[in-house]
Image (cartoon, rainbow, N blue to C red; front, side):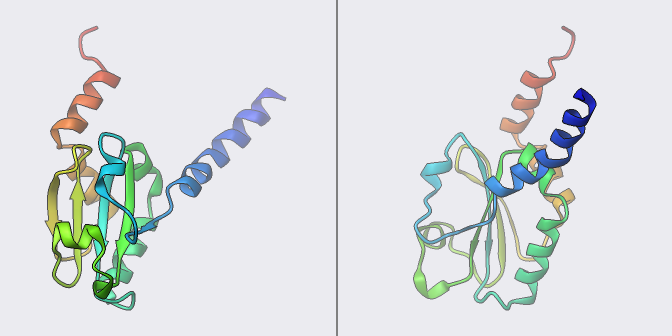
Length: 141
């Protein structure tokens, strides 16, 4: 019976992670609520029908587990007229992908969609992420 529980847990754990970290709308979201807890990946567009925005959202759906492993929260803002706090702070023009680290500082800005692989490779080079990996997998101990 234990192997069955292990199988069920292994099958549904990634789905549970996805349910918790669905993309959030930028309305009412501030960077302060993620400080030292999550890495915001903010996707801006002037409209939800923007082809770059649609492509980016499809790319993010391809490997959500890799994003969860890196404590990523995806935030979307497709309403420039609303002037969300994130839009005022990060000042995007048209489509923009902004990757922030846990310290709340923007690390990368991209004018084109990026795959999850490109995003996670960039995140894995951030100093805070490198420190997390060293703590999780200490070398020489």
